[in-house]
Amino acid sequence: MEENEMKQIISEIESKLTGDAEKDAEIWNEYGERYRGVPGTEELQSEIARRIFSLASEEDDGLFSDIYNDMLKITDDDFAEACRLINLHKYDEALEKLFALCDVIRFYVLSDDTVWMDFDSFLDSLVFQDLYQEEIGNREIGRHPIHPSRILFTTGSLLIEMGRAEEAVDILKSLIDFDPVCPRFLFELGEAYKRTGQYKEAAQNALWSLKCAHTRADLARGYRDLAYCLSETGSFEDAVMLYMQSLHFEPSRQAQSEIAWIRKKTGISADGYNDEAIQKRCEELNIPTGISETVISNQEFLKMIGQAD
Image (cartoon, rainbow, N blue to C red; front, side):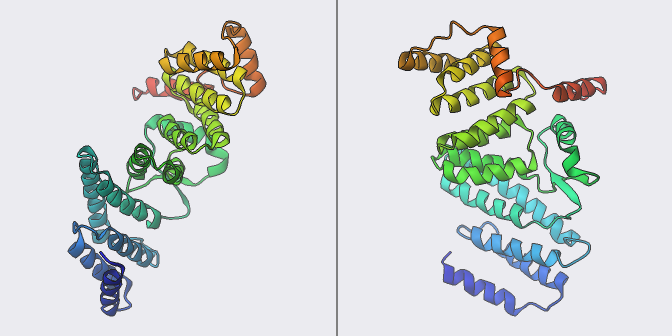
């Protein structure tokens, strides 16, 4: 849709507005339904969603129930269609839909007295509460109604796959805002940082992922990510040590290949790294050396109540 055509439609809608928030929201919603599924109208749909959310913010009750339910259904349908397009390798078309959904998330009106999250698992929610209790205080934790994590994760991953990691960074940082303790999400953000040469940010992200790690595989990936960043910034000895620590938790051809590459480049060998030396050096660098007590205690609690992941 051309910009002039979109402006013309917006002007047509505005000419019909009454000044009553609920009625005006219905008018915007009617036009959203009219152009739903029409190719090239994703930007128009985003603008319509933004206008409806803006009107809803003027009302004490938030979104009007009928429109609210319609928009959630549309969000689900559009995400399913985006996934279908990805499976068909129609990536550009999928991105149009995903970007429109990201705009819906951005403009969605929610109460300020609630911490709106979208946890990947029950364990994530428990870890979040323990690690962030001082920051969230007595505020209620609410599940975001759109479930934005699936949308933001898919968008960021697709952008990385398409070689557009720079764009993926902001999308994935938004994802972490909704679930800051999910290792899977943190690893994807770390991948975007690495591909854009932001090794300091990637290293900090890897350190945090180690504190949130749920499994030995999580730990292994976190150590590999951190080792890669150290290798890229010239800290080869510590990089080899962390690759060895990664192999302690999970076999990895990547880690073995990186150790071999560093040895060929610098002559540094992995032979001198035993468990005691690794433990001591990690303590010096303030790097976790196993699954945190916070995560373990929450895992044990879930087992006790029969809700382990």
